[in-house]
Image 1 (cartoon, rainbow, N blue to C red):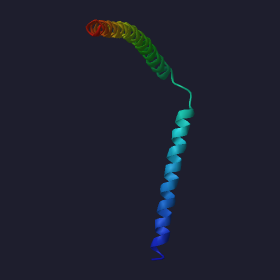
Image 2: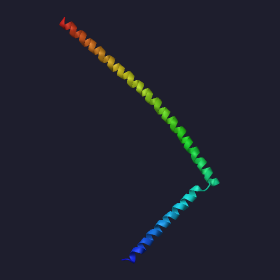
Image 3: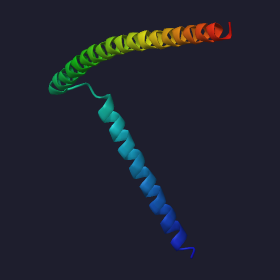
Image 4: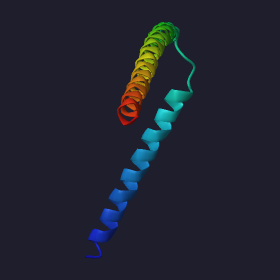
Length: 101
């Protein structure tokens, strides 16, 4: 039992050291300067993203315009319905008044 514990401990230490070394290597890779071909690739990706953003803005503007038009139609229909309801109430009241007098 005592012989097995140090072995497990050593394995755990080795595993942790390996992870640390891998993480250090990753950080070194991230810290290095960009290579020329990577710069070109990033410029292309940035250009595509900018085009996509412009397209998205145009699409959102188009949707907003369409929603504003639809909202105007809804307002107009609502006003028409309310006006019709008011006219019906006036006609009904007038008819009721005529019948009672």
